[in-house]
Image 1 (cartoon, helix red, strand yellow):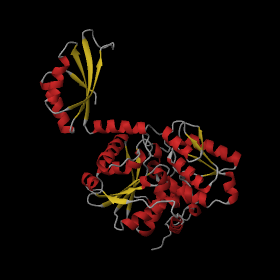
Image 2 (cartoon, rainbow, N blue to C red; image 1 turned 90 degrees about the vertical axis):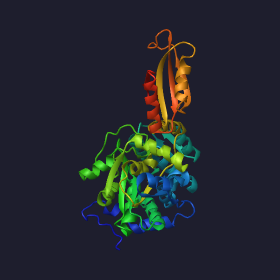
Image 3 (cartoon, rainbow, N blue to C red; image 1 turned 60 degrees about the horizontal axis):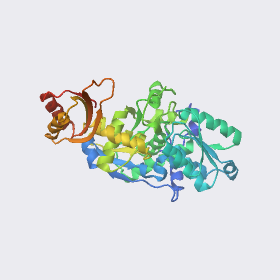
Image 4 (tube, helix red, strand yellow; image 1 turned 45 degrees about the vertical axis):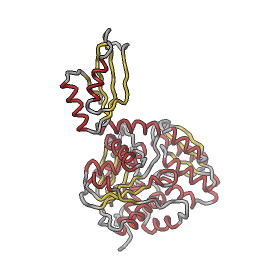
Length: 417
């Protein structure tokens, strides 16, 4: 089929849109630096979603995410004069590491502007690749403004995180890989922040197989691309709180928006609760650690079950997780699935009072994970003790049975989870 996109001729960005041939060319230039990441079938998630789920394991890419692909392709083709001044980028983490690593390979100076809220682990990893890190701004957009100012002063070339034709084309190589490994794929689910990944995959896949549905997935706290497509023009969002910082973008790219607006089949959103549960399941069932933005596509599949019996590919595009966040994910994941139940009980401060409660809990084979006593808080009356119990159950049914049993024994408690 004709590999040219059906983009309106009155679009001012036609010349900025990469072609299918550009994606193939960049992919062929990767050499041994960029890995072709695995695509594997998951029986567990297929049963849970009702689809035939094939996971695109881009979290196994060097630097831990797809964000190496674009910077390496762009930096490799810079002229000697451009390389002399080095490069600069703004990023909350993954793009920073990709640019830093690519710069290290090409032996050129690299400066990364990161928000002051960026993960310490991602800051350390970026510095570990040899980049100079400047912490400025509370989010990506503010860091991006700083990066532009520094670029004008120093002459360093800006490596944009998503709104660049070479970056878009390099990301499209993942679409080629999926078609090679699963030619009869029905649907592909791709995370969307600024849109660089989705735009590249759309060009690669739709140019060869236009009937393959491609669905973008955003955080419901940052639905910038969804709102823009709905309005048929770029829209900014205020943004809210989300653990998916990798796709927390207030305004999509101009080039990426034009491509996505033309070719995307649908854009959906997911909340943090779904992401937490999916990250937990990936660790427990698949032995895979994936960051929040990387897990969002599978989160939508598991929660909404949108494609019964179809062959679907959720792209899991990053595995760089802050270890402190990971600990919270485990605890919150257990609580979300009713496998960790926390209760507060006010007891008479006398010997044997707690044992009576513990015996009732143990009678249902519920494991006590943690016990915390409180005698000093202002709401605790003299002669009493507040006890918080963290309890491990088998799941929702077991937890409900425990709660019903405690009530039947007239044990007064407050459910904290």
